[in-house]
Image (cartoon, rainbow, N blue to C red; front, side, top):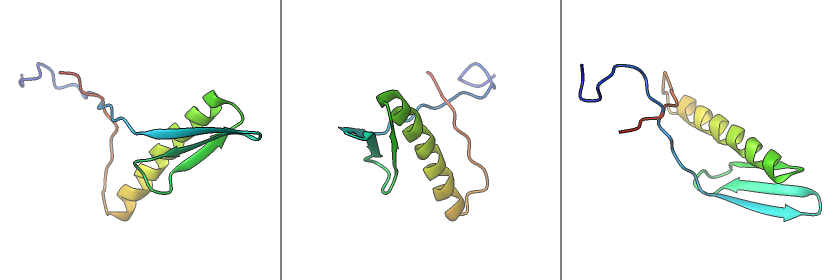
Length: 78
């Protein structure tokens, strides 16, 4: 057994800074750490769900363009 005590896959949590703006049309949200990563929603909760999806897609496209063959999203707790 390794020093983690288990060989099971763990998930890594990465935090991204976002900016939420409320307008007459709803909520606009941008990920400050990922250029061009934006979304929106009619409610705050919808905007947050949409930016989570946008971040995931942004990272997948970035990895594909960089020639990465496999990407996993994991959480690791020590």
